[in-house]
Image 1 (spheres, helix red, strand yellow):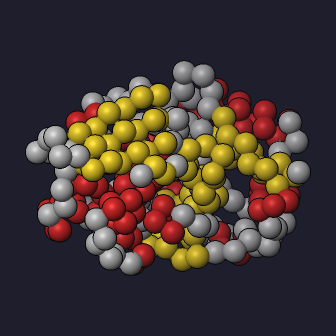
Image 2 (cartoon, one colour):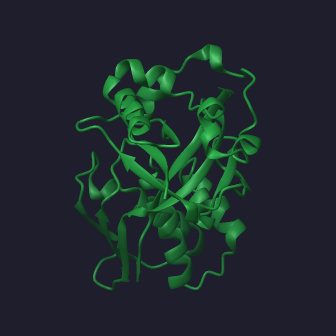
Length: 260
């Protein structure tokens, strides 16, 4: 069984405040982007008592034995006793870029295993389990635009005024740039916590040409001074004619939305 876990971008990202459990409450809009995907293959195996994992493509900063896909298998194994499988991941989505590639891989693993073993988990049940693996994993279960709150796990479907077919999303990462989640959250401007901002759900219903003054990613305030190449890429997107440009997630990727 083969699937193609895609990446996502964030339209706006407001950090509302820090929680007692150490996580942060957020407001953001997740949008799936299907032009950049990993390739995930899962096969049944009778040769090993435990699942096996191999990786090709972009070299990750963890070993295959510590891959998030194995955590997804373990979660379902602990609950349903599913058999070992052989997993191969061709990694194409850069990590440390705010594109959610790892979360997508884990969510697609859950969906594939659910089908492979006939577990009968519906969408809500899969989202509940995905949220245990990572904050934004649940989004990739339905994999459609959503307004997200909480730690990114409370999802509300959303529609845009401008249909997707009328614009292009281009994603780039400055060469050599990498922003870890820890770095991004450590540098957050605490004065932004709880600061009144335009409602993202209303902002995305405005014409895209107005988003530049309405939709903000809070991480840019701390990431840009430390990584000027990322800030420069955002401005370059506008020089190329982007209707809207922003860093996605906690960086380092920048996307531009262009008219077709």
